[in-house]
Length: 332
Image 1 (cartoon, rainbow, N blue to C red):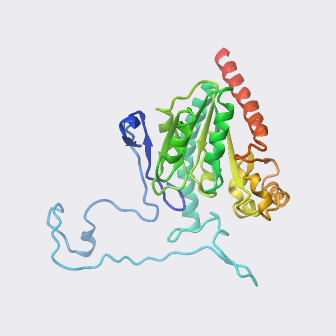
Image 2: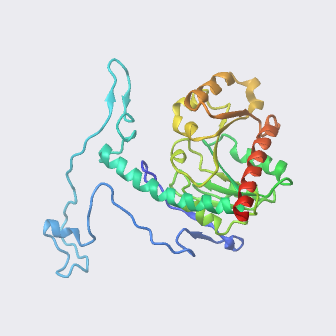
Image 3: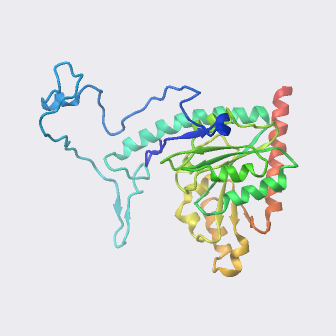
């Protein structure tokens, strides 16, 4: 569940994909998922007790005969600021950095801490899985339309003879992108998140149970197109790579700073379109480095191949490190 929007109904393609089946996160790996009701507490007894309109004496059979209201009155506070003399109402100014109607800032922080601590436990399991196999896991994040899938297809075609590649695809609906990846010959698993706006480590762990992942290879995780929520969720990856296209805006790093702060590499994609745009590459890179001074940046075009060799070299260097660490661990 996202702390802000509460997203998260997931289906993951499995080995039965060839028979046209998909399976939910519940099966065949049965889990007990606890849940909370963050803004209130209740049990599951008939709540009509509260207004004295019992359905039956045993509370078993619903049998309404009277129209009545279920309205609940409540009060809650909103943390936001009105900067003096400015036309800004800032709902990100509170302790939690976000506003959720009906929840206090302290309550939001507690919920976020609980959700992320569970996610982090799954992420540690995924990271250990990758480390034992010498797999370099890269989490690609961007807004919709940045060209992530096109970039991935070109990358796989260009590097698949150097090292094994596999892909986990995240989208709200459809398996379109996974099909594009499979056309390259690389194995791919689609995770559909339903209303969810990001992948989490638990989803990725399920996908790993059926994905053909070779030792010493690279796993690309194409996250759901969204520059907000994926920043907060560790999937167990070695690096987040943020993909920004020149058809967006130079100020995207300033508007969505959490994503650029969480990334280790920024690919500024669609460079082939620059002659047709007024996009200022220098200003964009400066804005990204203002958010994250340690961020590495490459200007690339997945269409023409411009700058892609540098990206492949970046990957290959880190693939070697992952494989060496796995070998050392096995020897030790």
